[in-house]
Every structure is written in C-alpha cells, then in structure tokens.
Image 1 (cartoon, one colour):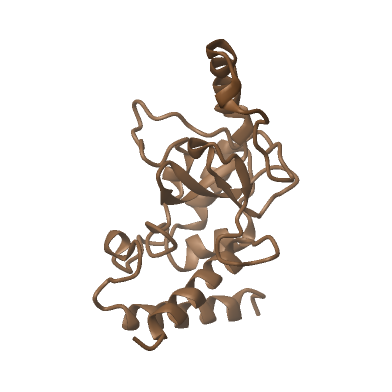
Image 2: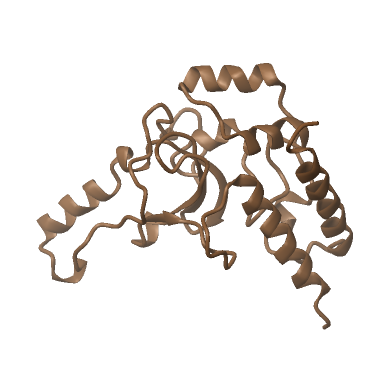
Length: 211
C-alpha cells in the first residue's frame, strides 16, 4: 500500500470537515479559495515541470498535486497552482512582466537569514547597496512559492538545496528576511503534508470554539 495513503485519507476527511464548519466563509482567506481545488495534475505534467526546472518535487507535495488538486483551498489566500509558484512575487503574476524563481539552483540557506545593519544609520548610498543585495534573485533560489500570506510575504517549499522539502517564509518585503515557517506554533520544521494538516487542525479548532 502507498505509504501516503493514510495521510491523504486523513487530510481529505479534515478538508470535508472544515468545509462543513465554514459554510459562511469566515476563515481568513476562505473567500478567495472558496474551499475549492483546481483539477489534479497528471504524472506526465509534473514530470515535464520537473524536467524543465531540473528538480524533483518533494513527494508529499507531488502526491497532493496528483490526488487532491493543483492549487486552491489552503492556508492564507489558498494554495498556488504549480506553475504560478515560479513567480518571484505572488502579487505580480504576469507571464510578460513577472520575474521568475530559479528552481534549478539550490536554496542557499539552512538557518533563518536577514541582512545585518540598522537602515536608520545608513547613508543613502549604503542603503541602496543594501537593498540591491537584499533582493538579489539568488538569495531565494530553489524556493517554490506555494501560498500568498499577503503584504508581499510568500510561503514557500524548498525544492532544491540542503533544506529540501521544508516550508520557509520569504518576508524580505517587510525587512524580516527568509526563515523556516513557525507561524502555526510548530517547534519543528515542517514538510508539506505536516504544514497543510496543521493548518487544517488549527482552522477546525478555531471554528469549533464556543462563541
């Protein structure tokens, strides 16, 4: 039996439960994804994406794409479709003008990263140099955007590098750097299934609390 079978069935059961608890779409982001999913992807489509970008998607995310859906119901404003995860900014997803992530190069971080220094004490020239370094494409190589937190913040899956398979946050727009995702109160780093199921659990608990 597929080792992920029980996890998928458990997630599907929790998806059904959460949808039934939030018929009025009160949960943050629910009005965006409407508790719906885009159609799953075929194995062929996923392999083509992997070949094009010279990566192998983490198995949990790959199975989710195949058996549940290619974007839709999920944390914050929902899960991004696989192809949209390439955009450097989820607020500017435009094939003509949008900058793209380089997945074929390894993600360079294993611990949280931010540029040191107090911007308030920098000269204009120093600040400009710092900003250019801060937003260099290569500091986010190997990150696949999977969810939009809002305010320029993205939640990402590491698809290349030592932190492979982990969920990380890119919060450079608010000068907070790039770091492992601990937003749900988890003490350990999460893979895709653990991250998604933890969101389901916390959302269900929130909606089941007595008014």
